[in-house]
Image (cartoon, rainbow, N blue to C red; front, side, top):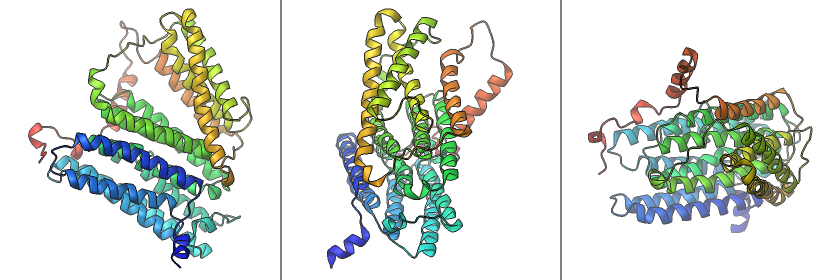
Length: 447
């Protein structure tokens, strides 16, 4: 009887097990760091109780098969995250950040609840696995998928629901790590969990890709304008979540899961090591690069993208959305090679070629591994290329070229007025909510 009830509430498939392992690993790393970091803090025990409950609720969420259980776990996880974000209720800025996040998560919860309600009204099913076997999408189911997408966007700080993430920097470092490496990925998980339904609507997939491209570009642009490490990391997370949505919109859901895993581990490392950033030795990359270094970097980019395509089991030149991923791998590999080629391009070319080749093999291999793990779910379904995919890819390419060649104008020239206006507009748009900023040290209530 007990096993029968559990079978109705939970479904432990390969996706849920992958997420559970990731959440447990990141939780262990964050808890180990916080054990030393928060020594002497008045909320020490409370923090670890909340962290343990948060990790447990996320594990319930990713393994839930009942709509109500998933919704409850979703809401409980976000409520616990808000409590961890505030940490010190007497600190007004932290409390305001928690209130802003609560409003955002409440909108997401209402959207997800509305989607689940429509699912039940249409199919009379409470089992997620049963829902995924619907072979036709009625207008009501399409509306439910739109509401579900809104819930995913609020969770993953996708534009225009990004303000809460940029305003969450008052949180203790361990909380920022678990938030940026764990909970914010919830939107991507939600899309992957319901991927069989989204794959039946090419229009919705294209819309997901478009908002992903917009978020990735905005996050990358805003990251370049930030004056401190935490704000840079927040904008970086926003950009990475945008690219994860792009991969979902391309129909490459296993690639999105691989990106989710890599981002979770890497962002946890960045936040937990952010305290040492002030002591790092910075290297001037010397942009714009020389023509020789740039051309050789493109050669290395081709090598990296080819090794990525081979190791991920995809064709290098193809007519579907896999091509977008290969182009992004080309841009990433070229950027990866450029610093190595800058000093002495010809001498360092062999090292750069080997480095970019390994870069492509490792990342492509991880995508292939996740694709193999999730193979029974049939989530890798590249879509036909359309104008939106090409426009988004061109925008990413042009943004990269601007970063290399046009970001620093000649010293003798003064920037055009429209450039200055655009810079100020972008800087203002990337700022936290004013109520979440502590403008004077006397306003910082640590106790």
